Length: 151
Image 1 (tube, rainbow, N blue to C red):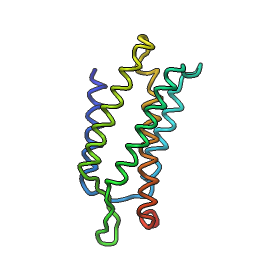
Image 2: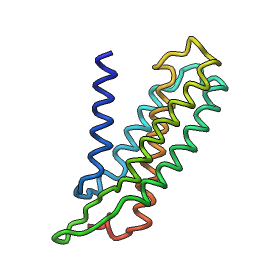
Image 3: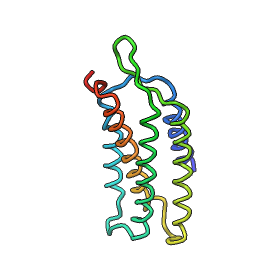
Image 4: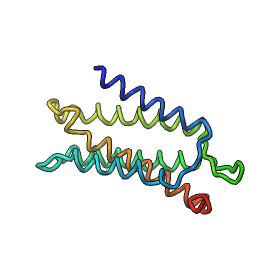
């Protein structure tokens, strides 16, 4: 239980942190999606995922892609002393809340297919969703502000 609270606190911190201006770093473009992709592959079931998890992940991936688009279009890039900064607005914050709600709804709607499904057996879907969301957000930010990553 303490682990869940700790992870929840980190997630809330990471989400709220986006509302403050942050220095843009090229390295941050693909580090988080890369780590999430590695974790998704590591958590993927060794015997393959059941069909219901593939269907669940398809819904999660679609929601993550849409969330990445919404966040990218609601994140501003500005320059201070010739250094790029990013800052999300409250709509991007609302997108996080909606995405977490969608994640829970999808998870509970698929829970009937595998009542013995454990948290760890579905972690690959969460990590995969995170990878898709941040990769989409970062790629769209790159397209919107092409000069940012060159600095």
